Amino acid sequence: MKKKIIFAVMLASLLTACSNNNSESKTKDKVSSEAEVSAGSSEKKVQDTKEIPVKDSSSAELTEELITEMNEAAEEEEGILISSEDIQLADTDGMGTNYTFQYDGETYNAIYTPDNWKIIDSYKITSEADMIIICTALASIHPVRGSDGESLREPWDMAYEWVQHNIAYNILPDGDKWKDNAKDVDINPADQNKSLYEMYKNKTGGNLM
Image 1 (cartoon, helix red, strand yellow):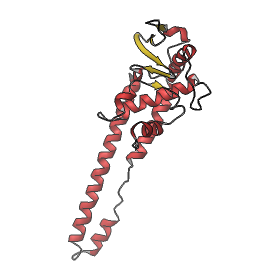
Image 2 (cartoon, one colour):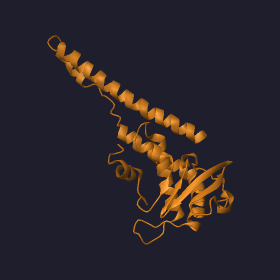
Image 3 (tube, helix red, strand yellow):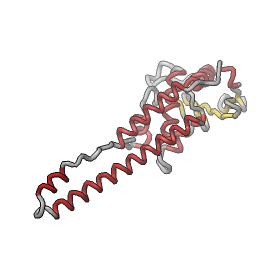
Image 4 (cartoon, one colour):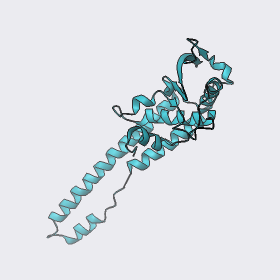
């Protein structure tokens, strides 16, 4: 909960910074216009106005900084799991497709289709250490191939993909075409070792920043 609050504050700071940046830009334009109007009476005043420094804060840089912070937070967060047995992974229908597992007092659903694990509401789990243990359990039952089509994905790189989905869910605005998808990580060969920027472009055709 503490980390979610921190992320919310960081997001608010990002939005505030963007708003302030726009405000500063408008202020600069207004000052310049007023200076031009009074140019005939005071050239020095115009010169002084043009030399007023305006802080340039890039929203792209702020977004990149936030993503870095959230990746680090997931990596540093202490987990609650000791081994894959702790999650009590169970095949609910005996068909090797629908599974449940336990985590922090909640039951989660995991769906397997060939070379794909989808975890419903995966965004609620934020410790990368615990993600690795969960992915170890999933991969032990149904491995997922790597992007080369031959190797098998490792629990740590499956967890990395999971973290990127979590970040996307937290920072993307409501209405974004990938936000709803990001809440349920789907671990597959295509997204192995891809950054959030690469996954976003592949899934939406647009740029994150």
